[in-house]
Image 1 (cartoon, rainbow, N blue to C red):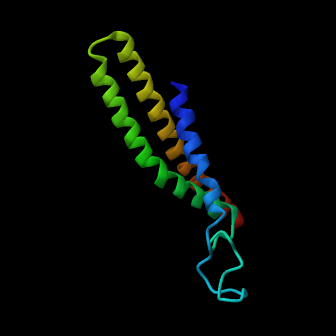
Image 2 (image 1 turned 135 degrees about the horizontal axis):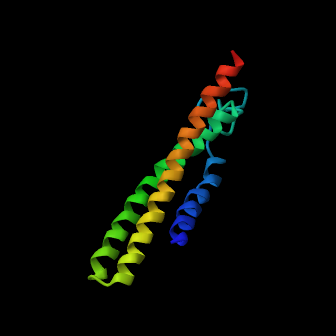
Length: 121
């Protein structure tokens, strides 16, 4: 079911505004010892994207675990009904697709970061 994938993506997207509230860790030129960088020491686009994915994975993995538990509940309550079993299989499929997209995004960012860093040398 596409609604499970859409739900997972909306959960991940909903945490992105929280990242704009992150505070820097180092002492900068700001009175009170704060940092000029509101992203918490992120200086490059690659670091920024990696930080977003790190937060997204931290939030999405427990959500995915709960979704898999829910899919197990769907399988148990199907009681052999072929229509309900197909519905549970589809829910499991889209839950795993969402997880693969999230983990694949982290791998792609890592590959791109390594490639761009290698081009700069």
